Amino acid sequence: MSVGFNNPQGDGKARINVNVDAVTEVAKQYRKLKKYMRSPLYEIKTLDGTETTIKNLVDEYGSTEGLT
Image (cartoon, rainbow, N blue to C red):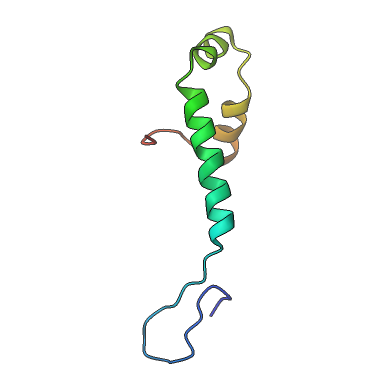
């Protein structure tokens, strides 16, 4: 198995090691981007065609549909 699954007991249950600091950092960045997307500045830049921050992320990772 991979490094994230650590099960020395062999009881059939998966043990997952999660780096809490990394998850916290990703959540913080996500909250900042969502706040930016709700801002009037984002709407103006989108209408103007100069918004690149979110556009680059969407192009790289996919759609923003379904995100709340």
